[in-house]
Amino acid sequence: MKAVVLNGVTEAKDIQLSEVPVPYVKPGWVLVRVKAFGLNHSEQILRHGEINANYIAKPIIPGIECVGEIEDPSDSGFIKGQKVIAMMGGMGRSFNGSYAEFALLPRHNVFRIDTDLDWTSLAAVPETYFTAWGSLFDCLQLNKEDTLLIRGATCALGYAAIQIANAVGCHVVATTHRQAKLSLLEDADEVVLDNGGLPGTLHGITKALDLVGAGVIKETLRTVEKGAIVCDTGVLGGASSLNGFDPIKDIPNGVYLTGFFSNYPNQETVDSMFEFFRKKELVPLYGKAFAFSDIQSALLAQDSGSVNGKIVVTV
Picture 1: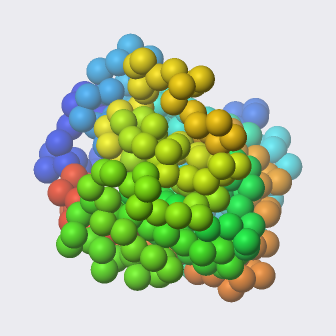
Picture 2: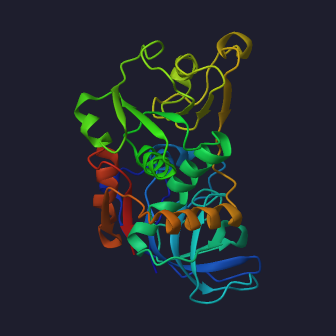
């Protein structure tokens, strides 16, 4: 089969497809024929440096998510040809991931889906929509009466969160720190240029999804109303932790702070997402699709930031 195989730090311009054996199935694992996959910041981090870490099994096929069909179900209970999505749990780091024509994956990483969506649209779902879903519902308990602030909304996760929130029927306020990207947030009810200093400028925020991260979380906490919930999910600002954070002083009285960690998907959540898609007639959003044979161009586009939204690769 064709696959991207990494042995060390690799720039996008040096990515090429290799011929490797199709993996043999084993108990507790299933062989998935990959139809498409999305690109993620996590895989960028791997290519640009994390590949050198001792905990990365090298050589490694990257890719933390995919959509496809069961090729060999082994002892899983799946049926050959069944539509599935797969994500997280060590894909592309502890064991080979989805940048390949076939992926051998642990049973618990793979989830059945019942949908008529095309493979390209489906490829936008696993990590991005699962994270948006968990952030909005598990963490923020979003409902139609809410006014939702999405900070750092011009990313694949932000676009997915806006789409889901619009379907719920709540009022959406979306921010970006780039003037040129304001037009990309036209699906939100309000669009705000975020150069800092949000506290005191926005009113009535009952829920906030912070995709910028730890560097601005204290400011986000001061932007919402008493009784509001803030969910810290993204790291667009580059900071994943915050030294000197004092929960007693930095979380305003009556405001609640939570965070969503996407490493533990489950079938119940996947079923809920796809039922929501059907009920609301939603088609998942993506920015641009590339053929697997042109994976180098897809990764160059990812590194340059030239695509607005999720980059999808069809196999």
